[in-house]
Image (cartoon, rainbow, N blue to C red; front, top):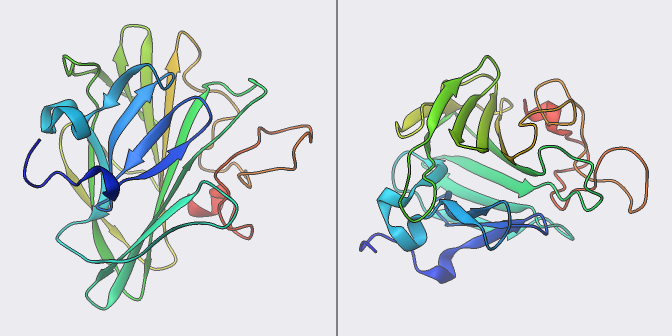
Length: 232
């Protein structure tokens, strides 16, 4: 573990009842096992260091955390950084489908938004599988970049469309009123995309009353006036 590795107390947690991701105050997912808590990690920098992979969304340079909290009565984690006169906010959570109707079963939604003025944000997507830190076979589809390790697949879709190459950090400018949403889907021996996947143009509110028919319930409730499609 390097000297810049955050302590374990620095991490927040988002989950879907099957697995969970640990997110540092820099916006890095440094621990994420699939398809369950006892599975192998796809992002494991917390334990294995840089070669074990990470998924970071946050300020390009050092920036103090202005606020970090969970939205009330949800498992949606909100981290806000002060970047000069502007603020950059990362809102993220996982979709919990306890009925088992959602395919793929693991969905993580992360949204970057800016307040004040435009802010440059870093995007570092570097998945590595297991203790051997295996790099994926990568396919760039029209809607998403897909990483594969045999029967295990992970896709990353961005809205608005953004070119993301695994293992190659990039920068995106986030303007006020124009957030950028990242949808990470993980599938193992199941379809990697379906009509229920949150993608640009869909109008999921992110939650529904328990027992109601239709879309799966989510532990990740974004503000009720802002469906996921509005962030795309």
